Length: 360
Image 1 (tube, rainbow, N blue to C red):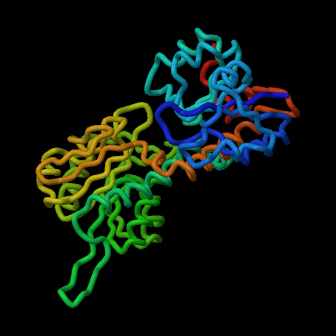
Image 2 (tube, rainbow, N blue to C red; image 1 turned 135 degrees about the horizontal axis):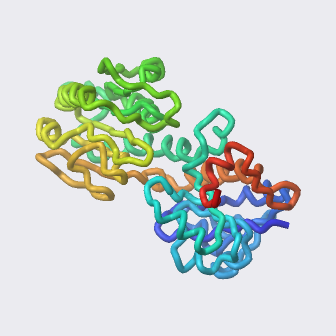
């Protein structure tokens, strides 16, 4: 019997495993060990963890688990309590921090990073990045609507008519498309830009206008991330974005380049040309931001423009985010836990991509 553990997140309202996962793990020959109170902030009580679940203390979960699943990487003091060869599954982002791999190897831990799962059709059910991006795109629009000092939809009243808000979405990946759909539902006029010409059809199918800047370098194998572009293209892109942004009430930015600083799409000069009261929601804030003046984890006002820098908006919908994360991890575990035994098959392309502590 394989013991799969989940503890309460330190700085996140989500929980890595929701109650219904316990029964599904039993079919794999595994038992779910849960720290008491782990799901409370995501609206899952201890009483919900009944089927094939054991409620334990944090220390008991850490010391008894064969596989430990978390959303944010465990703090050092927790990692030290794990037994050698324990498999730790989390969002490690090793491409952003080259100290993660040797540190975990030094503790004799085996690590799987969910953000390293290939974004392919075969691994779609395990794609945590897409699951969380969809929520982030939705929440980005709701946050923009909260901060914007005017309506999103057109309103015709006895006191006068109000024009619909203009929303510009930069990046039409999973987060961008969800932002477009949500903004349209709220009645805004929406424009969207993406370097991938293939995104045009998707954008237009959602009722938004696709903004084209010719000459973009396309890479359909970029795994949902933006592709580094030439300086000549970026210059033309910034000029077009500045023109569009100066007329927009809301700009939502989603462009990230894996393992590198996010491209700057909104310069300080562009922000200063935007309307007073306009809102920028920067989902790439943790990688430096698509907006030059973004401050990660903060809401600031620059030249009358409100700028929210938050790459973790998915955590503000913790119940559904936890549900999706749990199912993504469960689908990965089906490749690892077979008939009550751990089988880490490095010939499997998905496991090979996500398992990053191998010495070879």
